[in-house]
Length: 266
Image 1 (cartoon, helix red, strand yellow):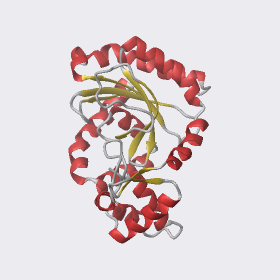
Image 2: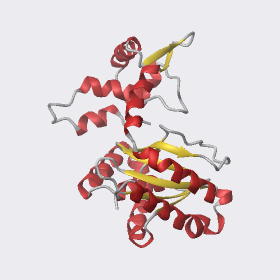
Image 3: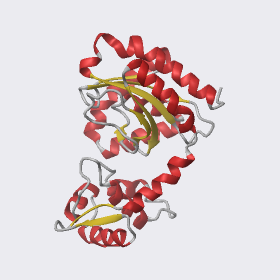
Image 4: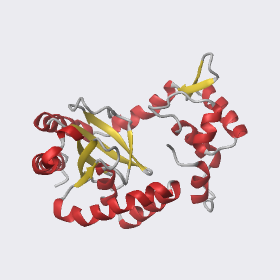
């Protein structure tokens, strides 16, 4: 679920350059998810915390611009094709995906895991490349899928690759967005901070979804703002006997080194 709009505005309350109307429009677009691709104004209000009049005005505008489409007979909306046209230039600019893709495919074939490349997106992870071999994974990760930071291995790897001030800011935003979830996940994060220097990878033992186990490692980038991490996931039935830690982890770390070398980062 996207960040509650009231929280976002509070975080930027003293920033005179912050365009509130634009932020509210983006919050509406973020309200649509793979699980809930069709929303009415009332549902958008509930998911964003915005007033009904504001949502009505912005959904009207976004529809005229092609970023939303009417669903006939339902008085509801879905994302429009203009949203996709925004995402393509970004993906096309990530030339490192061309380097990473064959290495991901080989890692997937060697391990039977689903392999994902994740980037930091505010308080979420967004997948910008994926290679699915674990067909028992019911969540079917794909390009554009998002995951939380604190309860996934890839999210924690991205946090650990962040600068201390940025990391502190992200943790604070997560705490404001969902205090109960933050409290639940904080011990997982604290344990990861202790273990990562020794292992070199992060490990989620069903922390996000109990049936999904994953490991992840950050990839060094020439541009610090473009933080990326590679993860391997297996379902619970296939993750017994510490398979991820004992067998998959060494191959994941080798793949990360291959990527960094191929991209000229080491």
